[in-house]
Every structure is written in structure tokens, then in C-alpha cells.
Length: 314
Image 1 (cartoon, rainbow, N blue to C red):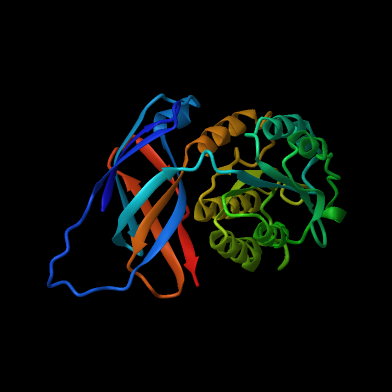
Image 2 (tube, rainbow, N blue to C red; image 1 turned 120 degrees about the vertical axis):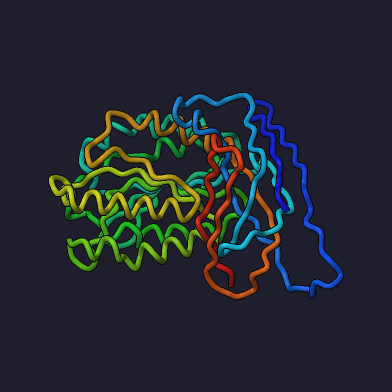
């Protein structure tokens, strides 16, 4: 089944016209299961101008799993579903990151009422949680502190700490889930080299664990002393963060390998993305346990749909 979709973001209206595929009596019955994944729908023009349009004509939406088209059951708005966000900051980010704390605090305090927030710092050993899950957005924003910016506090792999934080979503009721990861993306557990970064075991585990728990990871690149001055490592690390975000249904934010003047424009994009989230349910014909790839597209070339690249069935 395909879906024709007209989205009115301003009014949060959604109309769905389903076109059912007919089954013939000669077709054998097949075991199936229902899969629900988070998606975000907007126009490419909105992404370029950073301004939400009143209407978005998504037209026909198609879902393919493992390369085969699947039948869509429903697409429903989840903007009224509580949002749970863990904000993870790598302890050894260069000191210029501290100038971004104002933008991060403002983003937290403007989140919708009922949002749960956790604040943690990724460092050598286990992550330091400075704010447990709370709906007190002002308290969460206030718990942010400056980073140490010292290699002595650097985690060998930011993805190991991310794995530990993702596990904490198990204590939270089902709903929209996200991680905002501020990191240099460098996994140095196997040494400061390309192989350690591009073949990170912790990164692969983080992707699988996030997919199992429907946690979208939004990554924000920021350099550290380890990555400053080494363009090869810096770009490879950004590629790792891009992979993490793409495969979990999030988005990677970065601007080359240099420090940014402000995260403000990125938070504008993120707020629009979170306001355009939907839960897409479809019938999967693939019963095999393990990793399944997903591709969700619109027949309108001006529309972009962000979604997890895959999920893990167990």
C-alpha cells in the first residue's frame, strides 16, 4: 500500500488516503508482522530557508524493506507524544565549546511542556550524569557546566559512553526518543588512527542499540585537541557521526573541522525536525530475525523524509 499525504504543520493536520493492494485468491498466505518507525517530513526548500511552510504536499509515500515494497498501515502525528532527550557532551571538547552553552540552554528551556531531559558528560570511564531524567527544563538547563577541555578527561570512545546512556531509555515509557551528542567523533580505543575511527565496534553497537530502542541520535561535531590540525582524522570522525545519525533516524550537524560561531541555526533546524515527526506503521513480510534495511521515499522530488536506515528485529 502506498500513502498520499497532505501535511499542514501549522495546524498539525494529517490526511491519509490509503491505496490497498489487492490480493488474489491464488496467492498463498504469508506470515507478516507490524513495524513502526519514526519519520520526519519537510520540503527541501524549508531546509534551505530554515522557515516552515504552511502546507507540505508529500504526495505518494513508499516504504521498502530489504529492497522490497511493503504495505503502509498508517501515518500518524506524534507531536503530542512526550519527547525524551538525553544531551551528551564530550568532556574534552576545545574550550570554544563553552561559548555554545547559552544556545543549548535556550534550546532546552523552549522544549515542549512534558519533555524529559537528561544531561551527561562523556569522559574517561563512565559518563557523568549531572541531571537525571526530569521534566523541569529550567533545572536541566541550569545543570549544564563548562567542559574541562583536557585530554586527561577524554573518553577513549564517545560511543562507549553513548551505549551506556542509550540503555537508560529502558526506564522511560515508550514515546519519542532522541540523543543530542556533542562530540569530536573520535574512537581512539584502538589508537589514534583511521582504522580505529572507521571500524569502531562501539559505534556499531551504539547504532544497533539505538535502533532497538527507537532512539534518534542527532550529532554535533566539535573539535578537540586530538583532532585539531589533523584534517584526515577530523573528516573521518565526522563521517562516523554522520553514519550514526543517518542510521538511527537523526541528523548530523557540522561545518568542516573548525569551530562554529553558533549552534543557533542548527537548533532552528532541529526544532523544525522535531515538530514534523510522525509514526509510520507498515506490514513487514520479512520474518527473519536480525538487521533489516529501510528506505522511505516521496513521489514529490521537493520533499525530504528522514528515517532510520534500518532496524533490528529480535
